[in-house]
Length: 269
Image 1 (cartoon, rainbow, N blue to C red):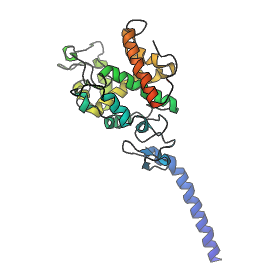
Image 2: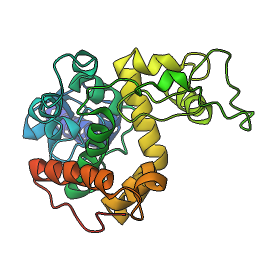
Image 3: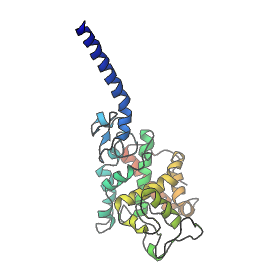
Image 4: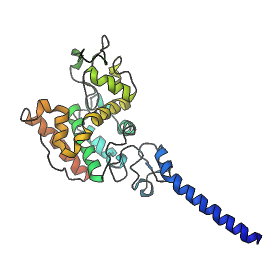
């Protein structure tokens, strides 16, 4: 009888342990804090094989299908963009894949959704980054410091004396009304020290992704043309500057091919 009771107790213990592991799996995965390039398994462990990456959304932030951002934004993809800029560019040593992947962990919705949707967002983001920075060449807007970009009507984001809110980073935005909320969201003093975006590569990508998620991410289902309109529609869309619009589109189509995804419809604005 004693042995039978012990067997029953052992089976009950094993059943309880299995139930606890099953319940803990998803919660552990949500707390998974993997290094860039690793995926978080359903049980909360980090690794790079399909057992860790399949359906996990990746450990580097974002869904983007097929194991997360790190499996799509590879060294070859990222450095392939930089390789087309001049070796003497400031961005050559400033922008790194590691900085991007680290920054992207702050925005898990970036590259989320289906595999195709995630890849299109990656392609769209880097198409605009390529266009704005000359293949990750420039860290700051050329001659941007000559303009303060201060709009005093936004009193909740007061301009700091001597600060210049010109374009900086991989997706350069301007004006105090962008630097203020970007800094508050990302974690730097955007009004007093906007230059941080051009000094810290992780902050630089975080600021770019903040701007993207705030202003562009929501229009992605409307096609690439809508992203161009959201970023620079007043200058390039509706026949105002088709050459610049088509340059962005060309990069997007190229990156879609590299990622193995159809570019979708509504490509122009």
